[in-house]
Image (cartoon, rainbow, N blue to C red; front, side, top):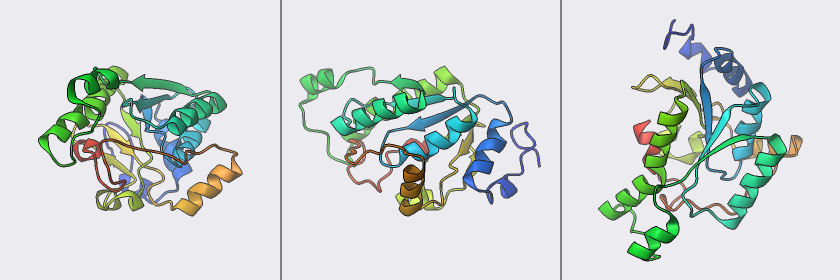
Length: 209
């Protein structure tokens, strides 16, 4: 079956393990990116992908609200794996936002919070897509993250034609931890996403893409 101008059998590819999915998609030589927020276990997918394509753009939407440990983890992993890190910041800094709106974040599920989420995450991601122009997007989504993600396929094609790949969709925490241990990868033990509040809540990025 031909998908997105490629000879990809999505049904068959979705039955494969992560390494096969990654190698199959990158063998197409299509422009690919991997996104990360440097939360716990993010090193696993990044490591697997850069083993196949070392110079792949690793895109981070840095909201400015990350913990000290997250910034330390990002720096350590970037140096260890020599990542081609591309950082996209909001168009307004955290200091500027707080000077106007105060330091308290908007309440979840309010119009004000929707504006905040768009400002610090969704708009920077749209800007990253427009700049990097990927045809393949690797993401570290896993089924256990949320009800929405539990219904996803490892490989799918978005309405805009972008191939979205979540090779680790079926992995559990034990598998992730063991992989990090086997490959001497660092991890982040203090992650915070200001757009979610609850780790199992969707911020909206994966609802749109």
